[in-house]
Amino acid sequence: MTRSLSALIGAAACTLGLGCEAPVAPQDIAALGARLSSWQPDSSATLARLYYSGDVAAQRLVVGDQFTWASVWAQAYQSYTPQAPPVDFGSYRVLVAALGQRGSGGHDIRIDSIGRFEHGSVAYVTTTTPGSTCVTTQALTQPVHILRVPAELARDVVWQDRPVVRECS
Image 1 (tube, one colour):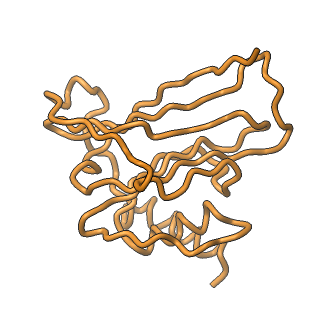
Image 2 (image 1 turned 90 degrees about the horizontal axis):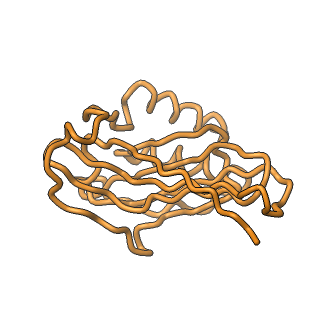
């Protein structure tokens, strides 16, 4: 099976709700109740942080099975696909934050932390855009951050983006 067909099947499975956990938590963070804990990823939690991925569309995903994980990994590494890191989906989930395709360099995306609340979790994401004074590469980029998190933090995830414009001197 070709990589693109595998990615298409995985995306279809995710869209149909077979492999990705849909956010069913309320979109209003106040409705999630009291904050119970906060989790900061360490370097071992990041499975990939790419600037030239194959993810041309902006997306936020919670991956909960091996088949979808293989598809997501192949999509991120379209031109060269290294072996996907193993994930124990009994204990962990994979969060994917893709910025989508941009017309220049200087863009970035990062899952900063996860807050666990009484009725769900919030994945806090920072998206960075270069300011008007920045000199950037004129190449198409597709930033993505892929993170392994404990399964209990990936239940009923609400994504909250914080846009940042980074000015250059």
